[in-house]
Length: 58
Image (tube, rainbow, N blue to C red; front, side, top):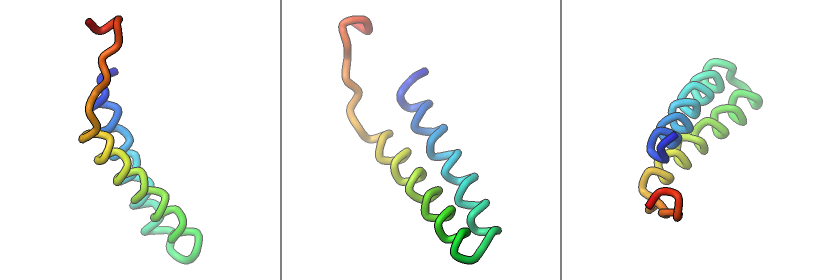
């Protein structure tokens, strides 16, 4: 799988988890929402990270 594809999957799953947290509400919902938002942020940040080339890719 390509690096950008993995980043999109992580961000997309973060959106789903954040929406679940939004609908759960309360303290549990806030924790789930924060967990989802963290995944969205990490997925987006991973898209801007430079790719490392290995000997197999050359």
